[in-house]
Image (cartoon, rainbow, N blue to C red):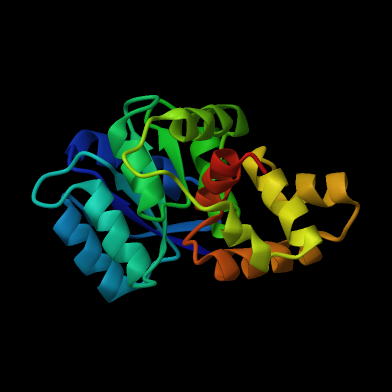
Length: 213
């Protein structure tokens, strides 16, 4: 059973999300939050598997709430936004969100996205996410960007997996491309995240884009 906390300040939208999630036999809504502070507090109390997090909320915005939830190891975060590409989403990805989803996503896609994140695969809706990653990597930044030397700690295989993450591939797709078992892919992803000190595979994908891996 996938335990989900829904954080959304608009009551009607929150009720709709809860209704969709509760229609799935493998998903349990364990709590609801109307703002970022409540989301963090409930995540700490309930320890859900995943927080479905709106980015624009009162008291504490979704980006800051995501950072606190991820830094505290409280849950994975799937970010909800009404916008296709916006600064809130970019900030949430930097904060360690496992993925993002548009609020107008169909019910089936929402349920699939929750299951995908629960499996540990953060790249959701590949066509949208790949565009997001590309846009994020192309945005001008104040700092010179990541140092390519960070890749020196990776093995050849780990670099290949990182490249696949940059292409927005799932574990199953990476396994097919590199001709390895899916369990092995998961191991490589976990190891490269640790070596690169990244919070999520989405951050790894952004890094791959920024470095042209």
